[in-house]
Length: 453
Image (tube, rainbow, N blue to C red; front, side, top):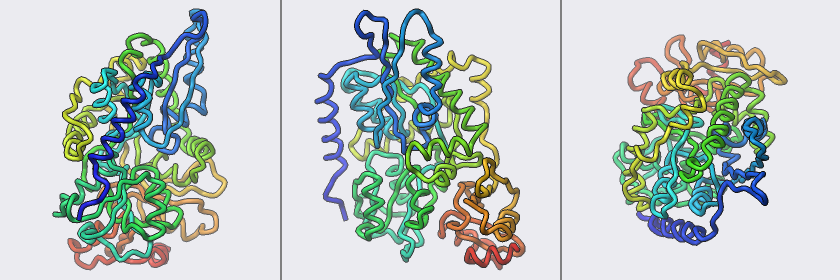
């Protein structure tokens, strides 16, 4: 069945909004006698894989410090604008009112397309958080749902945000499961918060969303995972886009931003718990959910380098948006411009970051009151620790046995295979493992804790 709200109508509405804003004008501008320059940065505080270019960066004040270091008798002001999604940031950028923005990969493509369409081209200048397998997006159901696989979604209502990476994950996952995303489900185009409420009320059967919504709902006991986006094995990421005219007019300002982003990235890597607490305080999100994605072993890896794997994935994403009538062809190679981040970091550091690979995932326990987590090399060892310190564990995280996607240990699906205890994000992945390993079986979390101890 097809939804009443079509992707085409959503695209038309967005296009109309963008066109209405193009008359507003604006720039990173000099005020009065030209001694003060205001730089406007659009970010999404609750899209926590952009924090090194938004929430965390703002709280640390690194961009302001980099601007002050430019000197030249100029005073710089930073105007931080917080949005719920990437669409209004794109609208403001193509209107010339926002200079720098951060958003996910699918919105970045729409940003590129709208910029070209309206004669206000933008450029992808750096990356914030990424996952090379696609683990930043998850499809979830209600805790008591009888749905256990993607095939169970046939004839069901599924909430997502059309034009987002989460919608891309939904479309691709359904296609791989042999379902037609346009015919076999009723897709509702909703903002994440609306979709989360719809799932809780029972008005939709499943929700496909991006960070941090799936982990947040799981942590709150309001959802359980149905599909781990990392099963697609296609990179997903968030990045920084800048207006081309701004970048050319004020390259030193853009490079100052990218230097500050690199500093915020290093802070997050060196102080993951403190960074999670800062982001939680600024956004109202639980720190435990922030850490799931942004922690030392988190689902996201942060690095400003624009890796070739991410560019290749971006090119594959274009067809999804074209099929939804949200864009036409997008020249990804023309959109990607890493010259500014290369200069900001220096050629040697940039090359090192470009070649760096994410570490192998491991389990973590965050003890109550601690500023450091405890890392474990095996799920059984982590469970044993949790069993022995039940009252003192703030959160425990385990990587999916198949995909490596980190998940809350008490929300994971556990499999006993001989003496091994193996965690999985979703039941379908666990059942696939069991089917291929004689003697293995799914066990409850309580049983897994008992076996470990």
